[in-house]
Length: 325
Image (cartoon, rainbow, N blue to C red; front, side, top):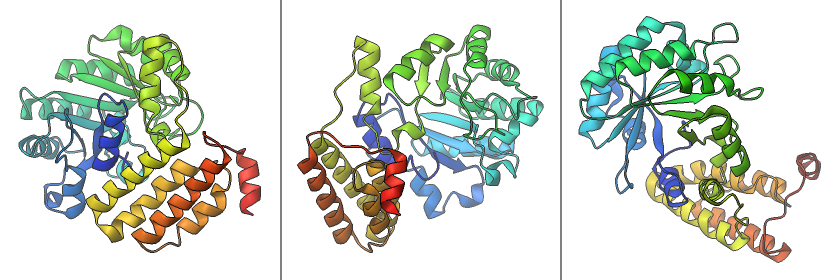
C-alpha cells in the first residue's frame, strides 16, 4: 500500500506475525531509481527475510530492468502490481488498467520472469476491469504459463476500487483452474473472516491490507485463530502504547524528524480511531509541529486510556463524530 507499507511498518507487521510483507510500489521508470522516494521505498536494510519489492509500470522492458535493478539491490522476491485502482496509476496504463490488455499482461510477465532467473516473481491483481469484464481466470492462466510463482487476487474489480464487498467465488474458481499458489485478498478484517475466506476460496494463503492500519497485531490474531480455533484476547492498552511508540521512533529514524512527524500523523490516527476522546485528539495531533509535542500528546492520550481500563474503550462512529462536532 503506497504511503503505508514502508520499512518501519513492514518490520512491525513481521514482528507481530505477518509471514511476508511487500514493499510499496517502486516505479519501473529508470530515471527515478536515484530519487529519494524510490530509494526509500526499496530500502530493506536490516529487514527480516524474505524481502519482496513490488514494481509497477506498463512497459515490459522497463519492468524487466526494474526487476533486475531491485534484485541486484537485495530483493529476494519481485512482485508485479496489476491491482492498484488509483487513477494516477491507471491513467498511465499501469496497475489494474493492464487487465484491459491481456497480450500486454503476458509480455510483461514473461519479460520480468526471464529477467530474474531463479528469483520468484509474484503477481497481485483484481477480478477484472469492471463487472462486465472479469477476466481473472484468463490472467491467472497467463500468469501460470509465464512462470509466475504465486498469484494474489483482490476480490473486486478496478471500477469498484474499495467500494462494495469483496467477492470470493472467482478466487475459488481460479484456485481450481491453476496449480500455482493463490492468495486471497479483500475485506479480511478479523480472524473469523480469514478462516471463512480460506474455506470459501480454498486459497493457499491470505493477504491483509487496510485492516492492518493501526492494528498490526491482526497478523498474530489470525495466525493463532487458524492454528487453534480460539481467539486471542485483545491487546492491552499498555502494549498498544508500546507498539505505537516503537513504530513512531522507527518512523522518525527512517524519515528524519520533520518528515517523520508528518508520516506519523496518519498512523497515530489509525491506532486511535474510534477510541473514547480520540476525535479531538486526532484533530489536535495534526497541528503539532515536532517530535517532542507529538510524543507528549500520544503519551497523555494513552495514559488516559489506561485510566479508563485495561483494554481500549471504543465508541460508535456516529458518537465519535458528534463528540468532534
